[in-house]
Each structure stands twice: as C-alpha cells, then as structure tokens.
Amino acid sequence: MPNITQLITDYGPWAIFAIILIEDFGIPLPGETALISAALLASQGKLPIELLLPAAWAGAVIGDNIGYAIGRFGGRALVLRHGARVGITDARLDRIEAFFARYGGAIVVVARFFVGLRQLNGIVAGIGRMPAAKFMIYNAIGATLWVAVWGFGVYWFGRRFHDVLDQLGPIGLYVLGALGVLALIGAIAWHLLHRRRTPPSGPGQPRR
Image 1: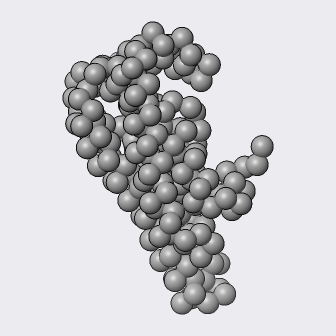
Image 2: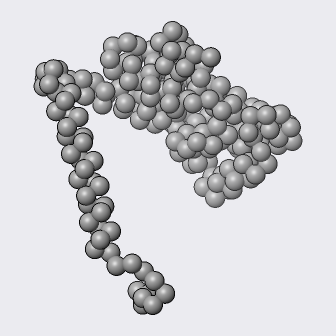
C-alpha cells in the first residue's frame, strides 16, 4: 500500500477527503497526519491550499455525520458487533460515553483534536440520541477549528519557514540547524543541572 505522502501526491485533495471521511466514522486511518502532510506539501506549492482546506472540512463533517447515523440507527449492539474488527470495543465506548455525559454536546467540538474521540464521537453522539441539528452544528464548528489548526496553521507556518530560508540564502538551513542543536544542548544541560540541584527523596526525608 502506498504511504500517506504518496497517496496525497497522486490524488491531491481527493485523498485527504477520503482518508478523513473514512477515519471519522470509526475506521483507524491517520487523518490528522494526512492533513498535516498535505498542508506541508501545499506550503511548498505542491498542492492547492484553496482546494485542500474545503476537502478536509467536507471529509470531516460528512464522516462524522455518517458515524452519527450509524450510532443513531444501528445502536450500540450493531456498533459493537461489527466495530470489534477495527478496534471499537465496549470499554472504549464506555469511556467516550462518560466524556459525553460529563461535558455534553461541547465535547463534539473538541473531540476532533484527540485520537479515539475523533474517530468515535459521531457514533457515540448517535447512540446517545443527541439531536441531529445540535450534533451537526457542533460537528461543523469542530471541523472548522481542526482544519484551521492542522490545515491552514501548518500551511501558514510552512510558508513562513520557506520565506525565512529564502531570505537567509543557501546557508539558512545550516544556521537553523545549528540553532536547533544549540537549543537541544541547552535543554539537556538545564535538565541535568536541575536534577543535580534537586535533592533525592527518600524514606528519611520529611515530606513538604
């Protein structure tokens, strides 16, 4: 099977639409990774961002609505009967239903940013018989925020990165790499120094 980047290169926004749509009604595909990869390609001028973002949004909204319909009309028994093949278990549904019970419809907005919740939030909303109109509104808002962060956000930062490289010239990549290495060394040094200054805790040490 071709890797994600190859699929995106071959089929463009259609690949993103399909991958995200399928992931969002419970099939374990790397939708978020695919969107990030596509946004990076778009920042290099290899994909049209004006087609990529609507494709990702449409796949996210339609996929979750399919999941909602499966949960609403099939019920928990149907989901568990056929979902075990793709990792949908009774325990996973219980955990996500607990999130819904605690946070209500707002969880649909933020669920897209978390693995597991993203794949199953439509199904669980359907099983819980959330009103369809309410789910569609929350789902559309969540999809918009998700695409804005991992689609447009990654594209924007990618463009800025390439602009910086163009301004610095051929040596720019080496400069950025050196800065990254220095930052890593500094972080390691700070961590080691912090560990040396922190006294070890033991049974004889008073608790604070």
